[in-house]
Length: 138
Length: 373
Figure 1 (cartoon, helix red, strand yellow):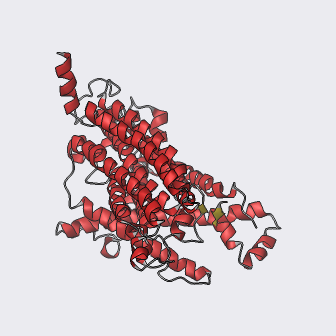
Figure 2: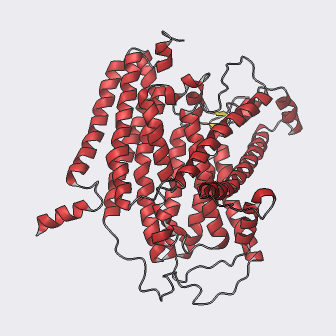
Figure 3: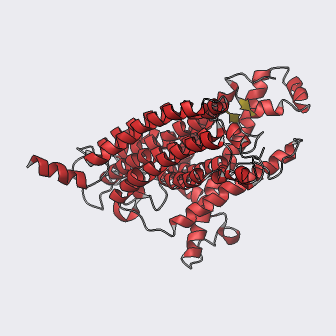
């Protein structure tokens, strides 16, 4: 029997199905077994016993956004490198190793340039960059 | 071509009689075999996750000169079952201001993301459920769902502690994905393929063939991978998203009962998965130390035992690290990732690429022994 390309994906779907079934199974088991005496105070968000002040969905530190941006750049670049890495050995066996290496390194140098730029800008520091930008503004 | 456990079993004679039992319906038989293996693996991993919580407490007790759980069953080994029953019988409380849909979705996504990674985990050469040709790439991609679930869990609770924990968790998980991915890239480059089967085939034989000992760069890459994997699974010393001394319990502050249990289960299974991936990529995976020309099913079981031993030893190291090192600060966490691990990982990648070209992909041992092959 030769495997078709979809055979390899079947366990993925089955595992996802098992995960969803397990979640709802556990949920309904706890609905059946657990007590349920809801009250308003019980369902207030935990804030160390105080009345919660405002909503947690508020403005947030912009650092996290910058980290997200840097992540996307690096992630996309590493995704683009995966196919090259996968056939690198094959190219080397074909005698194209040095050629492939130069192309690979020039691509990585773009990545290194990106890190160097972010580093220089202070985006890799968690606290310091704020002081830097604050000084510039004033 | 995607090798699966079904195509592995198909080379044995009993497969034909099984096929006859199903009236020649190949699709149905494939589904049934996959289902049996999936359920077995889920059961095994849930047990490992449960025993992981027990091991964690027992080892921490040893390290701190306490006794640890010793009431439920012999040596307290059934503690995780008691915990499970307790979680199931606890009242489910949801904050009134929470986003109900996302609140339910978050633990489910964590489970889906972790379970889906089990599909490509190479337990042995034959019993890999699905040896996709993009195996490791798929694993990196699908395990990102856990990061999404951490953030959603924090966001949906609408509690300040959860929000802080979720934000920290998301930024930490995505940051540490970079060094981990680049370390794995180096191994892809050495193995010449992304499938676990290809990677495992290159490490056949003695430990000198393992990728961790392949060259100095891949030796460092293993440690970069391991540190990054610790951070990706929110394990101490990188457990900032759930730092109990500052954030109560981080993104799952508002989760009670079974939903909290699923978060914990997903986390413990994920630790096992990253340990398994570490074992498969760097420590020779499920390969026997000797090359045998024949292949029977009991041999596959031996391979499973070898793989599990390596993965569980790494699991032990993860727990050991948790009770040895103090927790990092957020700024230290970010600078370790971006200023140390990422440049080191890129250095390793470049080093591996140059090594492959210079020495034609031979390992240090092969060079020392004169040519090899």
